[in-house]
Image 1 (tube, rainbow, N blue to C red):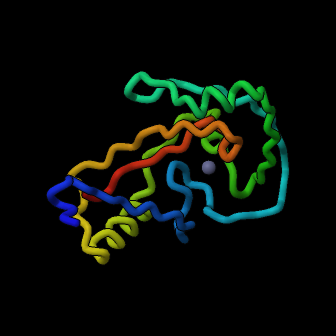
Image 2: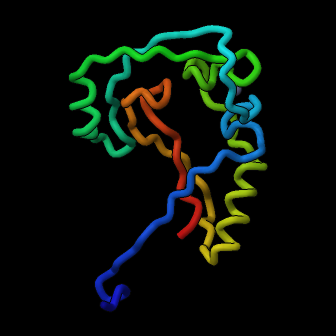
Length: 136
Ligand SMILES: [Zn+2]
């Protein structure tokens, strides 16, 4: 099959905890079982940057689930609890990602723009993940 002819593009999404601080705050990126406090959330679907609301998120919201999160004072702050806006992205983490991209033969983008990926399954406190496209 001629993939160029049909316009096929494939992406690679890598999830890896880096030995840097967290991406949007200065907390250490260390997993811990220590819990100094907890908080509860009901997550709601929100519009994407395109103005759409994801159908899967709407279905998940119908369950009206409540999520309990525990946090450590040593590795969590208000950013992770979605009580404070994210700080500037960690330059060390971005440098590692761009280095990986170059080593994989990818072509890094000129500018990195973070987007919201709506996820209300309780896997994060804000109801969305921050994600960015780094390479073409
Ligand atoms: Zn933090």
